Amino acid sequence: MNPKIHLHQIHPVLPVWDVLDALDFYVNRLGFRIAFADDSKNPKYAGVIRDDVEIHLQWHAKKDWDFDIDRPMLRIVTQNIEGLYDEFAEKDVFHSHTLLRETAWGTKEFAFYDPFKNGLTFYRDTPSM
Image 1 (tube, one colour):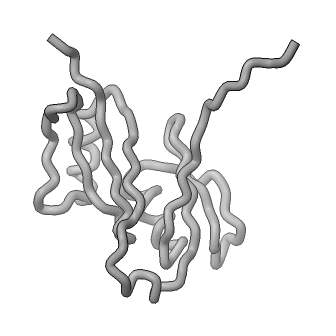
Image 2 (spheres, rainbow, N blue to C red; image 1 turned 90 degrees about the horizontal axis):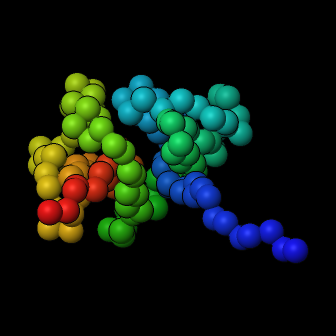
């Protein structure tokens, strides 16, 4: 008998021009912890983890940001969206237009960009009427 095929995790890889700066942002401002790094002094590839979410950070040359291209946008599910919004507001990670809002597609969410222009949206589903 063949075992059931089951996809159970995804580890997105975000491009960054400075892995140490990215680690500092994700750890000290967003509450992640370092899962691994390929080098402790000058990493080119590292991972951060918070609860069940793991994000990998990969170095790319700064000149890659000279071009106006779309960067990744992650959507991360949480149950206590209000608490997380308040936590991040205290860490001053939001942009001037960051709001906690209910959407037409049935979520309550907020979004902002990390220092490397990668988009982060945190959300929860809202109960349907």
